[in-house]
Image 1 (spheres, rainbow, N blue to C red):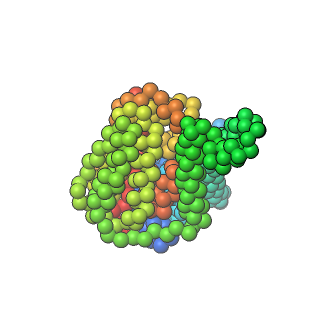
Image 2: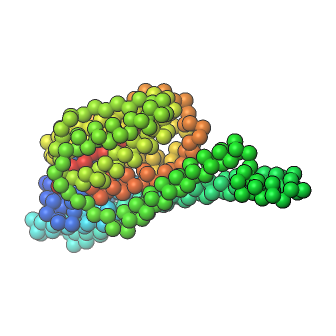
Image 3: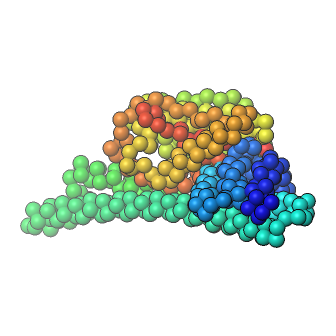
Length: 431
């Protein structure tokens, strides 16, 4: 056989060894003490786009024409980028993704060396070409995954900029109303120039008519409360991104925790004229960080109540065991208008795209036992977002995403035409 035929035979050999290569890769990751997120994934979720990456690699090895090789390289990069997006969705840190690529590289190097040792009659240029193609494969994987992370970081950052702009607009509105107050006081002063005592009394005790004063004080209190919440959220997010927050694992009853949280949130739902339903076992003992899991549920619930005009919110929790591991899931479903218009937050768009991509990969994997069903959604009862609610990103969602990464949990967003939105978080039941 000539070199092209021998490369084609090598590609066929790698295809036949695919299952063994993937198993060795996962085993290597499982033995890496610095990689913890993978243990929470099913087999199909873990392999993700890598089979497609290997398909492109094998096509590149067996390419008979330059056009085929270029197409294989393009598919290889696209699949690697998709893998990076999916790992972000599954809560991986960027360093974890890089280490996974390193383990895959080493597994493929071992496979090539074993093949070369078993086939001493190969042409001199066959194995160098294969090693070069492998180096290109892993280089593309690392670069495209890193590029996806950089893009998603930029999306989150742009969302925070919009939040800060919104806060600044609130401050400007408060300043405008304050100036209006002083203009009214000045008007009263000009109307009472002849009586200094009365003018002094107006300035000191009754600077403006009570309706305007009351309205301004209400606006001021609401603005200060909103800014305090914003500053608290920014502080929390900064601590998460700086790595100051650590998970504190313990065994606890997450069912009781979530029931108590929803009970405390009922008055807010009633105030907005919405229902708040719960569904889940009264007792569900898991291992995890109780405070951070409660913060995730609280942020998602507040977000759902805030952006639902009519209907309400349903919070569910359940066990989610598969062949590969034990997990549990938290769902927050609302009857809002969903994410369908031009005001869709960028981070929400990225989550929705990653969720759909994950479902597509699991369907292609064909392993029904390892797949998680799509998150349920409620019919929409809202025609639009409430007029008094801006469609901004909200730091709350970024905090949820960071907390999910810290807890090795995946975050999904399901929504569609005529449907509300569902955020689902899938946690490991044990670490």
